[in-house]
Length: 265
Image (cartoon, rainbow, N blue to C red; front, side, top):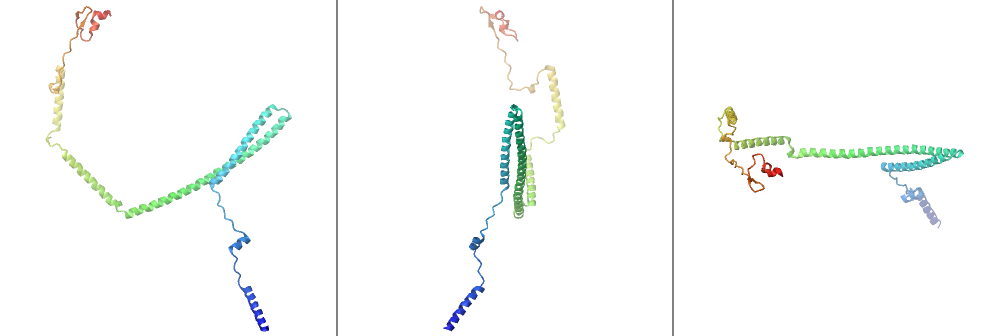
């Protein structure tokens, strides 16, 4: 029994010693959160547009206060015009305090507007840099695409393009020569002297001028054969009040103007 008791005691002692010397397991995340609390997620910083809008709202609120103070000053001025003695001095002191408040609010408003202007400038610069980055990326991609096209596309060979242009120019010139050859007038003799033709033309003009000065008529070779001969004008006659025929009026006047009946009328 004593031996059994000693064995049990030694077994318990070894177990306790093992628990004491064994490394402790780290506590879990849940236990750590219960002991020290969970770390809160960081909120993103406000944007420049939000900051500018907040400053603008504050500036509008200050403007509203300034308008109210202006209304009070107008009221005090009307009362001061009617007041006399100590009452006027009292109103004057109150008006001075209102003026001081107005100056203070005006300074605050100017500061807020300057802050908003600075925020807008920073926002504009930031957006401009973003746009510039996008443009540079787009231009870089386009540059790579152009280089790839020049390397892989055989149709973009400069020497081949220049050769094609020269061939097209030669073909166009050959086509023009063919058109000129087809439109040439073979009935016109080649041995005609141009100076001789000009001399003959001058002689014809001189003959035309001489005949015109002599007879006043146009030469026969310049008269059109199809021209119709002028027809004689039809005679006109008028009757007087008794029915007798009156002589026709001379050329250039009317029968009514020459008749005595017409003159009487």
